Structures are given as structure tokens and as C-alpha cells.
Image: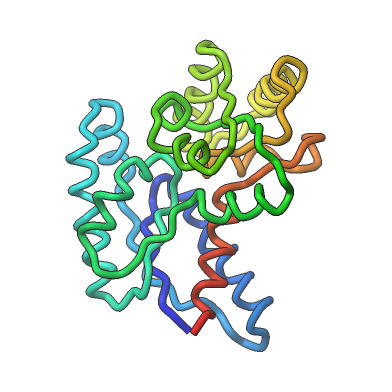
Length: 231
């Protein structure tokens, strides 16, 4: 079994889900008493959040490059970044190590192609929704990405940083997110929803949404588990 290097802590709540899902998938696929071989480096999210809010992406990248190098030295065979937003510095981190990184959009794109879907609503942090680093991964694969109106972008971002990343899960916020999705269904004729923030998966579930809901963290974690079992 390969050893998964996991860059976590952004936030720790979603990292805990990564750890659980990876081990559940390994157990299901390998059976018996098998569990995942994981080297986890959980960062202090306060440091990363300040880099984000101050637009210091190079500094954030340098910080996570050191983390990735530590994981490589610790014996990781490949690395998974347990957050969507920090994939903004994915290429920077990949260049700093000799082992591969698995991009969080990779398993999502696999499913979208299997289901022949090409127009989806993206929900995530304001960085993920507004900037191109994340959306371009889908666009270059023929996927049309829809984002909410500006006031809704601000609302989703506020829910993520001021509630979910602090462990607050409010029914009122859940209802607001569902309303944003329903509006996109009516106005944009979307075919599904990409939860482009690992924390959103802690609040929204498939049974609340009529269209396919793509949980990026769950798909990423399961994909990493499968990769760990490939010789």
C-alpha cells in the first residue's frame, strides 16, 4: 500500500472527514483489518487564512511547499491537499517535491464525464468562485461553470469562514444555500452543483438537492484511497 501525504488543517473539521473517508474506502476495497497509511501534516489555519485575506498567495505557497517537503521526507508516495482554495498554489507545491500531487478536481471531472454533465453551479470561498485558478480546471475540460451573483458570493463566503470553519452549522445558512441553488436551477438551467469548499459538505447533503451534488472532498478522499492501492 502506498502512503498518502495529507496536508490538512484548513479547516481541521474537513480534514477529519478526509481521514475518516480515506480509511473507510481502504477498508471497503481491501477488506479485513486494512486501514490507510497516512502521513498527516495539519497546519494552523489562522496562518493560512491571514495569507488569504492579505492576498499573500506566494507566501502561502512557500509555507505549504515546506509542509509538502516534510511529507515527502516522512515517506509519502503522493500528496493530497485537503482544501479547494489552496489549490491556487497547487503548481507551486508540485514543483517543490518529486512525488505527485492529486488535484481535487481530478475525480470530479471523471464523474462529470461519466454522467455527461457540462453545466454546473460552483459554490465555494470567494477566491474559488471569483478567481480563475479553480474554474479553469473545469473550463479547459469543456465544463461550463456558473457562479452566484456577487451578494450571494459574499454570503456563501461568510457562511464558510464565519460559521463552518468555526464549527457552526446553522439551519438558516443551510436554507440560504439551498435557495441559491434553486435560483441557479431556475435561471441558469444548471445540471448539478459542485461543492468547491470542503466545509460545505458538512452542511449540505444529496437528499436536500434534486440535482447531482458533487462533494469534492469526499470524491478526492475516495480517489486518494484507490490510488494508494494501485501498484
